[in-house]
Length: 338
Image (cartoon, rainbow, N blue to C red):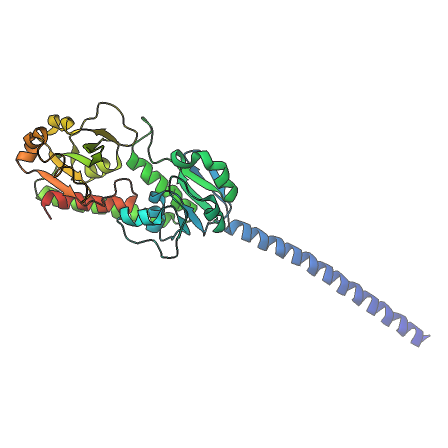
């Protein structure tokens, strides 16, 4: 009986031990599931989506894009300012000719066609995470672009009452920085730009150019005549000149969405007491060619008094923060004769 009793006790013990072991495994399984749930929650919180506001609405990005295609040059510049190389850019050769900033585009950047007619096929080949462009240029192919990747469409030329081009540039730059998780870098870039403005303004004040009135023109041949763009207050470049202590002498009669009035030399007569700053191409200098013997041009005070100031032919007037600093420095050098 004692042996039988002992055997029963041992069987009971082993059965109880097995039940405890099984229960432990179940509890362990439950804890494991809870652990997976916690890990999943941590992963989700570490890759939170962001909402970017552009000219056409809001776009939610689930994760930080790595392969980005840009169809408008200013947004390529914005990415470079943030330390991000785009995967593709429209008209790479044109960008390199006109956008006079550092850093430069990588040799690995793919050309995806012209800004006017980008190649949807070339864009798709790059399998981008994000496309950035201007609404006014590519709004008509918005659906096709969004079929390839989420597309941000900004508008560098605000309508009347919606702010100036400079304000838009800063706003868009910050939104792009948000999209690529580079907001701290954007803050540094804009802070450095403000510091550069202060330094240049101080230099101009020492040279007695503080509050000087400027007429800024980009001139070129049109049907063998001289065409002059005169920049208005809402333009990017005029806001930059104001930031370094200069003033716009030109008072356009109406709002110009692109920031300039296209006109002829006769329009300069009311502003001939200002300093005349201009941009021409070396092979298309209308002041030395079409206007060389023009009595109106030669009779202007700033021409007679040699108060005309040339900017480099590759001066970029529609850029981002890096181009803004380049332009501010070139404008100051132009006035000082450097």
